View (cartoon, helix red, strand yellow):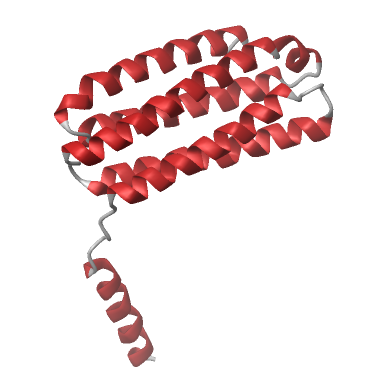
Length: 175
C-alpha cells in the first residue's frame, strides 16, 4: 500500500519537475493556420445559415472549435518566449491575414443578424461572439509580448481594428 502511494507521489513529482516544452515559431505558424481554417468554417456556417436548428448546431460547434484553436494558439505564443525579427515578420504576416479574415467574418455575422434573430439564436451567437472576443484579445496581448518590438505597434493596430469590428457585431446582436 505504501509502495503504491510512494510510486504515485514519485511520478507526480517527476511530472512537476519536468520542464515545459518550449514552443517554436513554427508551432505558432501551424496554430495560426489552424485558426484560419477554423475561422473559414465558422464564416461558411454563418453565410449558409437560414435558421434551422441543425445549422445553428453546426454554427455553434464551429464557434467552439474556433475558440479552442485561438486558446491553443495563445498558449503556444505565451510559451514560446521572445521571437526574433525573421520569425516575427512571418508571424506578423500570418496574423495580418488572419485579422482581415476575422473582420470579414464579423461583417458576415452582422449581415446575417436578422436571420439569426428571427430563428431565435441571437443570444447564443452573442454569447459566443463575446467569448471569442475575450479569447482573441488574449491572443493579441500574448503576441504583443512575444513578437519582435518592431511589430508590436502593428499587432496593436490589428487588435484595435478587430476589436472595433467585434464591438459593432456584438452591439448588433444586443449583448
